[in-house]
Image (cartoon, rainbow, N blue to C red; front, top):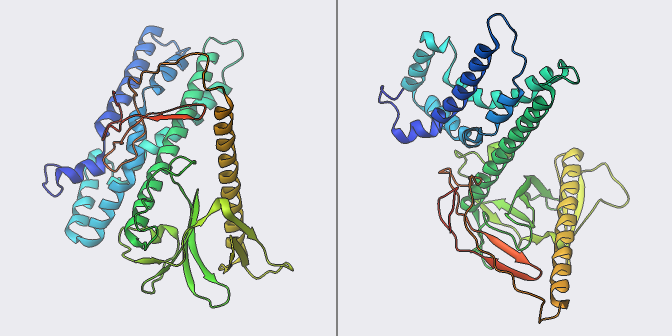
Length: 376
């Protein structure tokens, strides 16, 4: 593909991400297993692989970076395939190469994620066939733990990446007027850490039937309406890069520590619910009862978490203030470095900083841009 000149280096990097690093990871596993087989002797079954898997799975971080960025590459391929017949023919021709075994490029790009999810399954199967007291049983347990941890890290990073991309989409597609015109969606909340998009979708004002697009974050609910009418078959379509819809703020953000969600009284099968915020009540209708249930539950859970977190923070500050000002000693903290942090930016990097708290005291270090291994 690179030699064909049909793709720029930036496009190749977007599609294949850190493919060479994945090859290095797998080559190490294969080499270690071959050496173990060789040391076991001819025609002698290998008795132990758990230690190898546990060790190598600890160095599979490149998979986290690849899996969290592979969707950008897939989207690029899809866009070019849809818009360029010649490029589509080119990809079909590549698939006929004997080395591809008739498989399209998109299938190969899914392999890393499939491999990661299969490690726990295969190790669990081996463990079930390994009797108690066998020398490989404990190493296999450790390997299974590492494999499940790797899957969890990959899933968390994929969700984090999707969250960042959707927050950035909202930033460019929602017209925010005063007093929140300078609100940065992809930022830290006051007390809940990074802002997260929990739920989104279409709803209507119960009385006027006005169409609204709602975005539930971990700290507030945002109600918007489209500048021009458009259709969307779901949240995935809404956040598509090809969707140029522009939304306007319907009402100021509804803070979740000030909100109360209620179902209609008396109970009704009509998909209506009410959102009470200070001195205002919003009567909302969804397309069906299932959607109403989802919205009500998600808003309630997010609101309870916000209120509980805020309460704990206030208690912590109060406890800190109640300690005698003289104190009993002095603590010196030196911030040195961090390694292998999560990437949250499109370039695979992060703007890193360290936050240190003690009682009611808080210190935030300077921010080091575009690095996953910051050194202060």
